[in-house]
Amino acid sequence: MPKETYIPCLLRLFRQYGYDGATLSKISEATGLGKASLYHHFPGGKDEMVQVVLDYLERWLDQNVLQTLQRPGEPLSRLQQMCDRVSEVYEGGKQPCLSAILLLGSAREVFHDRVKAVYRAWIDAIALVLTEAGMSENLAQQRAEDAVIAVQGSLIVSQGLDNPSPFQRVMHHLPAELCRAIGEWEMGE
Amino acid sequence: MPKETYIPCLLRLFRQYGYDGATLSKISEATGLGKASLYHHFPGGKDEMVQVVLDYLERWLDQNVLQTLQRPGEPLSRLQQMCDRVSEVYEGGKQPCLSAILLLGSAREVFHDRVKAVYRAWIDAIALVLTEAGMSENLAQQRAEDAVIAVQGSLIVSQGLDNPSPFQRVMHHLPAELCRAIGEWEMGE
DNA sequence: GACATTATACCGAACGAACGGTACAGTTGG
DNA sequence: CCAACTGTACCGTTCGTTCGGTATAATGTC
Image (cartoon, rainbow over all chains, first blue to last red; front, top):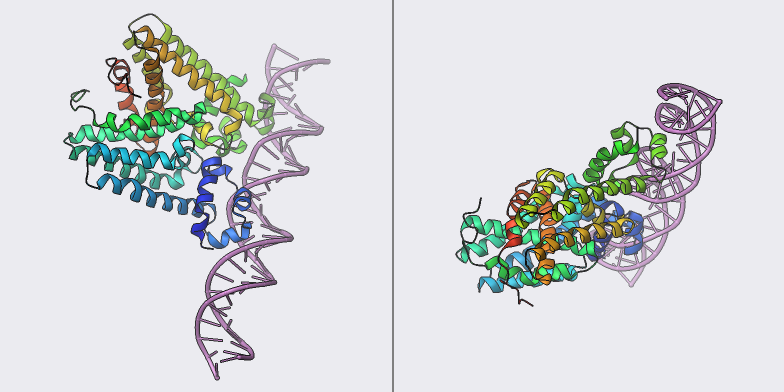
């Protein structure tokens, strides 16, 4: 079996237990592979397993979010589609974000650059949609940042309250909120 | 020396390395205490160290946020004060949130109830200010949730982008955003 | 077709290191 | 003297990792 087979399983483990908590014993048990076999597929060890999962998630982001945002159509509808995809990947707010987990764990430094690139790409893609819709460069960048902030924050709060409704509510209102009339606190600062 | 002495040091370690990453060796080195001394002050081991830090943070939240919010004065100004205090504790966005770290690490279950209580108390305190200002119960609850979401999310994004400005920007606009005219998407959903 | 070779997938057992935690004999300060 | 505290040495466990080796299937060679 190719190593891609085990990506969903690995993603689940890292999301549930974090980088340190997802021990090779747990990974071995969950995949059904002996530890030695894991090192056959992932010679780089645990770090490589995370990297492969990040490869997968980057591909997912590109195909399901970035490309969706760049397709023709109403800005509001494109943002709506993005939210739908995002809701799927986080299972309606029940699953935490792997990027955040890696940022707040002990492996911060190892994966920080990749996580940073993911956030940047996501924010820039949203901002592009908003500028195309006529929004000023600065405001678009801020609102795009706010969108990712809202996604990440609502995931945290949903985890904290043990209730996915904050995430779902945020995702429901996000597209309209992003497109709301320009100029409200445009001059702010 | 009383064990409270070591709380700032412990907080720093847990924020930097997470629960698993903050090993007893690191804690011993950072505090200057041998393992035996650590277990004299914290017989419950690492878990108790976290609990004591959480005690401290709960006390801090109560004295610096909840009480501030309940004091008399303009709602906007009270929210402004809250943001000032919150900015301090997160060092302007350079420090992550311990609650989020505990939520996303392997010790999730152990501390989940306490973290949940903290988020609940914080949200409810903000909501109370907003209802006092004449906002409807439902909208106040949602906006209060949004406030905590914005704080947590902007901390994550600031960590991710390795740049505290998203957090600072969010904190700067938060009070006004919370108080903005009632009824905009009141009927939504 | 028969045989040797190679590549792929997998595993049991063990490795050294580090983990969280403990036992105990000091040592210090009131 | 007594209690609070600490240094040293140690415990058992688990960590991530590696070694040596075994099946199975594919590939090349005559």
